Every structure is written in structure tokens, then in C-alpha cells.
Image (cartoon, rainbow, N blue to C red; front, side, top):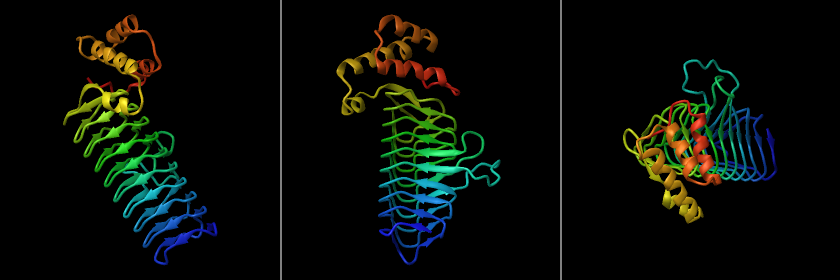
Length: 263
């Protein structure tokens, strides 16, 4: 085991001798840490946690009891290949959450960025890519190959279809069923999710100016509320609203959609 001198491992934990543990890592009771696992400085793993596969966990993460990281993907085509999980720094992963390793169908890696809060029983499936400062509330569930932008919030019991993209600073209301892309800066909700408008409160909390918020509201009305196709709406927005960075992010989001964008 490559282990720094300041590592603390509970006597009941099982840590493979080939695992790599950086300084100030703490491994609690009854944890199981696999051979190809790397854990960064200051990460605390509470108890009964299983980390397996080719998994890299960054610095200053806190992983609570009964979390599973790096287990094989729930994909019938997976044949045991050395796919990976990479988790950044400063994340909190609460009880019973699961983060699965990737398949070979995309980039061979499931990615979680920095400073995310993954609440109890949340599920991050194979090949997902999460940015930074995301909140996944209790039992929020991601299918495979999902991308989530920075500062998005997923309410409790949200279920997201595979290959969906969730834009930055969006808010997904509790129990929403999401089968199409969620634009950045917007609020969606509903058992079959619908788009309801700009995430005004969230944007205000993050320091967006009233001018930016009002510009996004105008774009929302033109694209979603005036009975146009998306193509027509985007063209109309470009004619009526002077460009600003957040508007370009919103309009550019449509270009990469595989499943379509929510209305």
C-alpha cells in the first residue's frame, strides 16, 4: 500500500495493499478499498463504504456510510473492462449514494467535479459527467451518459433519462421525470417535466445582475411562450436582444441536443 504517514485506517477496514492513500486520509470502520483506488489528501471515508475498480477520489472529500463508488455499470454490454471513476475535490457524498464506473461506449470514465453535494440514495450512473457545485437531493437518479452543468440543483426523487443534458444554474423540481435536455438558467418541474421559466431566485443568489436576468426572461418569452419553433425563436431573440454571455450560453445549448430540449 502506498500510504502517507498521517493516514488513519480503522482496524476493521479492508484496504488493498496496492491502494494509494495520500496524507490525512481517514478510513472508517468496515470500509473496503480496492487495489486500483487512489484517495487524495484530507479525504474522510466514514464507515461501511466500498470503493472499487479504477477509481480516483480527490482531496478533502467526505464520504458517508454505506456509499458505493466504482462498482460495475448497470449495463448488460459491460464485460469487465478497466473503465474508471474520477471524483474531484471538496465533494460531500451522503449515505447509500452510488457512483458507477463507466462503460466502453463513450470516454471510459464517469466524472464528478468539485464541491458537489450528493445526498442520500442518489445514483450517478455510468458515463455521467458532473461539473462543480451541483446539488443532487435525496434519491435523485441519473441514467447513463448524462451531463450536468455547474450549480445545477436536482430536487428529491428527480429521475433523468440517459443522454440528457442539464444546463448550468438550472433547477429541477422534486419528483420531476426528465426525458429531454434542460436549458441553462431555467426551472423545470412535473412528473413529465415542463419548463416554467427563468431560475430568477437562483440566479440572484449567485450574483447575476438584474439586467442579465431580465434579458434571459425576454429570451424565454420569445422562445417558449410565443408559439414558435425553437429555430424561429432563436432567430427572433438574436434580432430583438443584444448579445451578452449568458444569452449566448443559452442559445448555444440548443446546438448540441440529441434528445431535444424541454418545452
